[in-house]
Amino acid sequence: MATLGNPQNTIEIIKKYNFIFQKKFGQNFLIDTHVLDKIISAAGITKEDVVLEIGPGIGTMTQYLCESAREVIAVEIDKHLIPILEETLSAYNNITIINDDILKVDINKIVNEKNNGKPIKVVANLPYYITTPIIMGLFESRVPIENITVMVQKEVADRMQVGPGTKDYGALSLAVQYYAKPYIVANVPPNCFMPRPNVGSAVIRLTKHEERPVEVIDEKLMFQIIRASFNQRRKTLVNGLNNSPEIQLSKDIIAEAIIELGVPENIRGEALTLEQFAGLSNIILSKIK
Ligand code: SAM
Image 1 (cartoon, protein in one colour):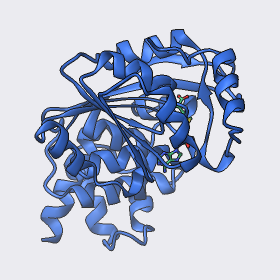
Image 2 (cartoon, protein in one colour):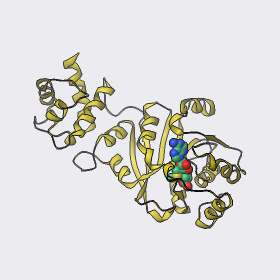
Image 3 (cartoon, protein in one colour):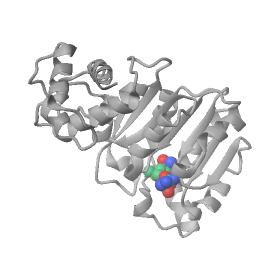
Image 4 (cartoon, helix red, strand yellow):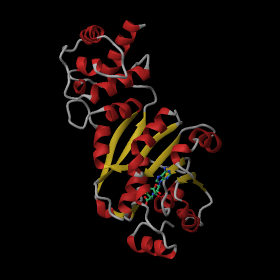
């Protein structure tokens, strides 16, 4: 039975082990059972699933995962949490705890070993200081994943979900949407955590696309173009790309490509859809090859 998701039991275990919260590890533990239920149900976990949990903390969500999944692998950086996890998860035989930095773990190897290379699910109440590297790392390393259901800073969830023409739209929106379909499951206020974070949070589910939503010949070039366009948001796309140190293209080529794409020459990058960025990168590639 899951037992930790409330303030009393969390305080009790923390006191028992004299655990000291480490700000540098983004430690804010969940103490609300409704939120935990929502995360598990949004991830759609079944007894067939192998789940990777990033940052189990004292094992609050891990208990829920062990109850609903076939197998759970939890990667926790803080060595002081390992004896606590050994106690709080002692009732389960479907858990593997790895004491390491998630950014250094070979997740492809874990998926091969634990699920014969078939897609796993990722669930986490993420440490906010490394949300983007964790999520982009999972996508870019081509780990077989069905979906990623994570708690992130509310503002970051909004940025992942929005489309062109909004202030939150940017390189993160495009990168996430290239790999997955985002859906905000719930907004979560600070009082659902111990200690309370000083920002609002949200649970977001990213369902990996089975096929890429757009055709891109050179992904690296497309992302360079995207980054360059948003580095100088106020500038037109032509000037943004022309001023980028990452892309060495003449202004004429950029202008020609934008016209060929069929959008106004003075358009700003923030107005382009993912499909248009893909199209623009393919046109530029054809001009520089
Ligand atoms: N899952 C727990 C919960 O919901 O109560 C804890 C979530 S807390 C926001 C983030 C957790 O990630 C902490 O336990 C922290 O120690 C761990 N963590 C931070 N950086 C990490 C990293 N690079 N690799 C693995 N775990 C990390």
